[in-house]
Length: 246
Ligand SMILES: [Mg+2]
Image 1 (tube, rainbow, N blue to C red):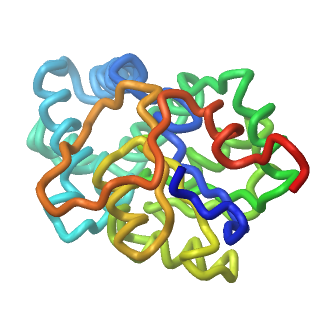
Image 2 (cartoon, rainbow, N blue to C red):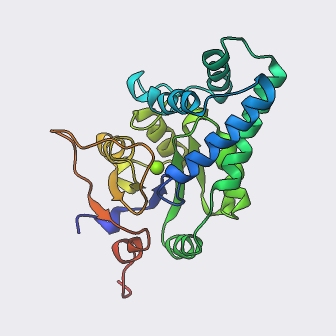
Image 3 (cartoon, helix red, strand yellow):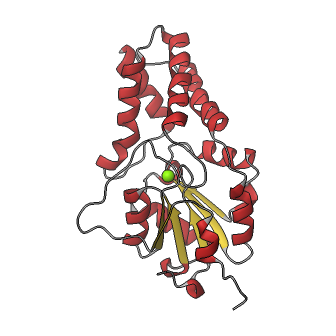
């Protein structure tokens, strides 16, 4: 094990595909909800066209200097590209609400997660840092699952303006926690956003492969390797908590 536990004060988590599943099934559910809303508002919507645009929007920040788009402009862009019209404010609001509600509805918390977080927080401070264009979706999802009080700090890319692996979201997290990188462990599923993002600024990274993500990035030559790899979140207990009193 390469993690110097005695220096670590805080464990920070990614959200989708780390604490909760947000893979092909969850994304498909959101796309169907959007298709229904678009059809109601503007008429028939080709699901393949919708999927092509949404899939492109999901990875767009990774080829745009890691700049995050806000949820409003993503919804406007979707209507412009499918129907070639500029949507009215009320129509954009309905699409934003559809995305928000479908996210809140589809995300489920495994029973094991609060149990694990409660054990970890007896020894560590906990934080959450997620890439998502809508901060409210993540915060309200945490509240619905009873996790709001679990994390001392919650940082969302939509609020920061940049996505991981950009340094800004990680720096925001550290500054809100008043910590240096060496005092923090970051747990995430995304090789580029989470493992490379954390390692590049000196945060210890644990790579989890518990869930199949919707979008993924393969390792390339020169990449950092994670400090540990886990197949299930529950392995953190063994990795981060001493079995006996030290
Ligand atoms: Mg993730």
